[in-house]
Amino acid sequence: MTFQYKIRSDLGLVHIEHNDPFDMEEIQLSFDELFADPDYKTGFDLLRDCSKATLPDNWTYERFASTGAARMVENSKKLGKCRVAWVMHSLLDFGRGNQASIILADVSETIERRPFLNLEDALEWLGIPKDALD
Image 1 (cartoon, rainbow, N blue to C red):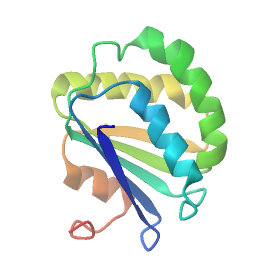
Image 2: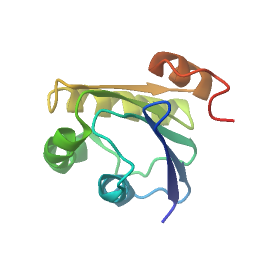
Image 3: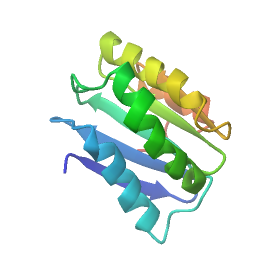
Image 4: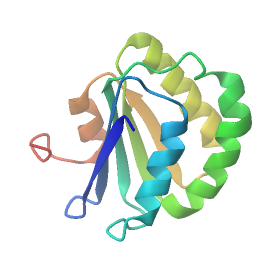
């Protein structure tokens, strides 16, 4: 497992850090672990920090438009109304993250997703103070 997460109830936030090697299946694994955690509450925002991970080659439009979107329908119910910020490793990953955000926008109207190239911008968008994760 190349991710770890921390629930910050005081911020209404789940901070998930991904590391290499990044595998597409760890997205669902992280949701499965998160939803089983008694400290998780529906409606918490998510901050996925992939700044230390490179997205895999199979992170494609075709995958998100088929299996990725189908999985997110069920996950969306458990996430509720929230924001999901992705901090990406590179411009290529930023583009892939943006593509996924557009595709998944049709899956749930209650979740707003955006990719970022740095943590500070993601925190600002989430309304989290920049020093809150220290």
